[in-house]
Image (cartoon, helix red, strand yellow):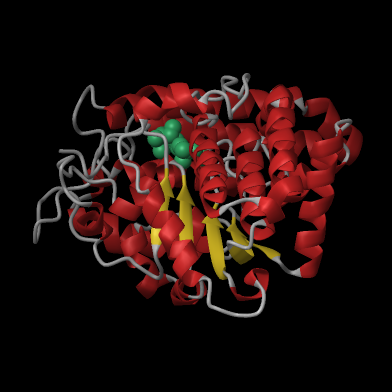
Length: 420
Ligand SMILES: O=P(O)(O)OC[C@H]1O[C@](O)(CO)[C@@H](O)[C@@H]1O
Ligand SMILES: [Mn+2]
């Protein structure tokens, strides 16, 4: 990444809160402090739980964590310089090196403040500082401050989940008889259900409930006009061309990697789509990539992934439960795999991945198609810069390309490509 506030070789400056009134400015001035305040409230509300589990040590840890988070909120609200991390987490050095390499060269400390640094960096940094506050107070270290919101989003979306699993059962039971056109029709529907599942994110709503209330299949028609760029035909042909000729479709289909975004309803739409891809022979394997710690309020962690499968298995709904058991066996058989590389919870633009996380880049090179879910991934794919909306997506990727890729994203931030 280069200096944040100039265009070099056609690559524009990073978006930041320097522009008063911009979405970056309003996010850092209003939304991030709101999220932080909700985190502090959540910890405070669980005070008795910490006392029951850890006694006085738990109460002291709860108090110290709140003190650190209140200090963080003050730094943010008074535009203080971004500080180095002081915890013992494994990714502390990459984070501090990033600060030295990409932020400090801006010159004096003042320019490395919350409102003057790249928006993408400071927003990611806030979630990493929350982790630092928890880590520094051991009984709190593994507490997921966003868990309540994520589980509530799942429970509030049950009607939609039941409708989706019922639809999938209808496809599964006729799978062998489906013509290629019928298969393509179901593919398009479930791909778009996964796209629109991204509307259910607790960061844009600063924690307010925005679960899926109505049938995701029935709302596709009314949502179709809101799709700005539709390359679903290219996604389909990438999967078809990855099906090497062989004795059975399942054995020779390609591998699809899904870089996950939000837990709750969106994760269910991704698991349903992944089940369809395997059951239809469009994919032989699906690899899921989640976050290694709680991130952007509703992003998926390993705990969320396992919890969602268990909850679906336990549902008092025949087709939900059937899908849940299918998902569990796919994980056990290795047809599905879950990864959570630290890179996904660092601030890098994805064009840095080959250099900064070559192991992850090599993993993605093993895929025949990589689907990136959500707005933050879209911002990292393109560097969250002052690009013109008519610029091509390939240009914005700045050379990032481990495999054919597609972003399934509902527009929540400034960056947008391929318009016009
Ligand atoms: O869950 P998603 O779709 O990545 O959205 C992430 C959220 O964080 C942002 O990227 C910035 O706050 C918003 O665009 C969005 O609210
Ligand atoms: Mn998210």
